Length: 329
Ligand code: SF4
Image (tube, rainbow, N blue to C red; front, side, top):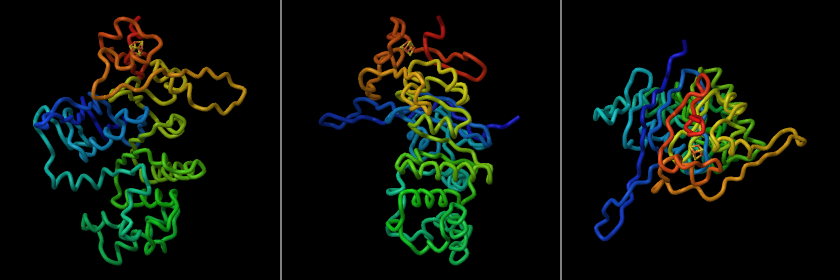
């Protein structure tokens, strides 16, 4: 049986809204609103949803890069935080855990310090964690660059000398430097040209197999999730609406929001029937989400109960979970 590498329970991340003369708290932006899931060792778990639905905040909160509001996260045997029990991992322990938990950022232009050469960027973690320094660290950086399909001689160059795809490879090399077990991939190909996206995805897949990595793969692009992820969660306004193996969601989507997202994915067969579902209206503000089912303001199947009662999570087939009142009918 495959063990869980990550367990997330009832995670919430609210950002306070302050206003008025005395800058008092007047509300919260509920970026992540009570989500629970686990990721198995060696699995690629996808998080998908429209921009602003809380995907990236989820990734950052799990890594303790931003303070959680509620919930708990356990990585292997180590509890990182458990807000209900007022537990937060010690800083020194978290620092050493960071070797195992890395992140690849979305924007390959913004995530590399323009003042540092590539060798220093890739080997920064090695020095910080006292694994290697000087020539040894630079040699390791060279090896990592070569592993990611770049020339080792690039160590003396600077970020502005590289294309977007090359920069993302540098970002991947940096995240691999500490031999992590788990990587949060935050829209890693969103800022790249389509022609480069496949190359970077292939590289990530190869590295995953070579090093037995586990990924949390965040994307708004369902076709990428389908290609890359074993299981996936569809997120809307900070909550999960459907969770299953990717294959099941693509062959049997149940939640109206998932169906709408899938209907927008381009089909490879130009003769295939297109039943595009157009979602009416904008995504409501996470500062003031609709009562009941958060999707009810845009759902064409909305019923009275949807406006008052938040749907429970139901298992519609083995390992396929949906939050929608239609499932109860
Ligand atoms: Fe639509 Fe109601 Fe299901 Fe929400 S609970 S997705 S409003 S049918």
